[in-house]
Image 1 (cartoon, rainbow, N blue to C red):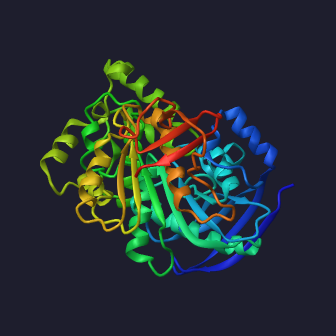
Image 2 (spheres, rainbow, N blue to C red; image 1 turned 180 degrees about the vertical axis):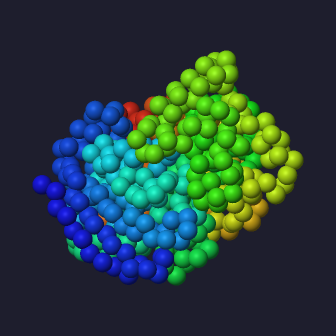
Length: 443
């Protein structure tokens, strides 16, 4: 049975009172979580199954692009049967267009939330502004509202957790993939610039994110792109935020493509949008899908104006959402695969080059290999969690490296199961003669 809590809280992040409602959506027993591991073919090293878990849908208030309070939603996964305070893991999700794809709408299928919570994290997942049950248009890859939505959710979640008798231990881990990498980086930047007395980042793992919107991502405009629907999403989002990219969308997008806005109303998936774009390209412009580039959607005059004007409003909007103009003050893993064809690896290299000469804390750039954007995701997420496990203060102690005793090492593997050596990988899994496996960090 679902249980609903509603209460009113004064929020320090936006200096307004906020309303939070919590709906207990689903519970998992230890046996249920064991089934998740079995059916999902997850290896044991992903995380120990220590606790049953409750999953809640949360609604809360956060600021939109105008500074007005709007309703937002998210999910919280809470370990049960605990007797000590717990670390928070905030997961920032990747690109979602349909409301049905937001974390709060998929609590029953969230393996990340359940596995991390069962291990001993309180796991938070904001839907951001305008997704799930949230109000307004989703400001895709808009750093300011990504960060504020995540930070407000973290702060408000602490009040909710206290109301159900759960305490946090002050540790905060942040990770996200794709757009979630951008949102994670934006949140770290905002927290470390303006929230040092409220929240402290223990460690972060931005993964495969577009940190260089104005350079690395723009370079993709004239390439055959696997998800052309990302480009109009950016256009419509930045028009919603800045209101100066065009007076009429036909100034920017060619006929056919200028009618796409209605497909970003939360009822269509990115797959459906991609298919529509390829259909328009082939039917109106005789461009087959396997030759289509985002540049094929843009009016020539608009693109020339953008190229020739350093103060073009679209250029300025992209630059304002770059995230390589600060220095992280907490340990960070930049995890990416060099074969990424959606969000080029250059984004992480540029972030590394910007941060590494000045960063005071541990910073690592981890290349997961020549894998595509989707292929890289599982490796990256597992690697990020194992990095956090090394730093987290759990109620139940986690032994990352066992003593060898009389066991012999049979082989070593990377996280994708490929044989590797200690010189070739930052993290290896060691298989012993008795069949046991441990993980060795070499960061």
